[in-house]
Length: 160
Image (cartoon, rainbow, N blue to C red; front, side):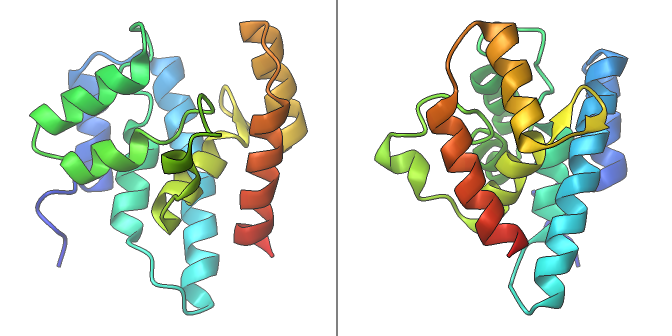
């Protein structure tokens, strides 16, 4: 039985549409969700305990407020106000910013999957970590080498 505090895939898509999240952002979220589901399924098959419903909801809703300044905080706030604090917590860790902070290094498995899946999707295409990081560096005119190293460690852990 689904935890009532975690929206289903259909409910998550309805939430995105009701929020008027742009269609290109929804397509990105759907692709991130596909990557996250594949990883979750592989890990579950290995006997790792994962809340897949939570992974799916967080992946679909991670960019719900993409158009706003500091979209992660805005998105987490919106999801909490809708009664989804656990989804807000997981999606709130998808950013590359400040990963060197200790609290961001201790990610639970669902957060790692969500974080990593987002780093494999450029717009709505699945790409290599390297290509995605290069795209982000170009877009934000910022060096993401620490974040790239962190993402590589998570990749090793999840895809070993």
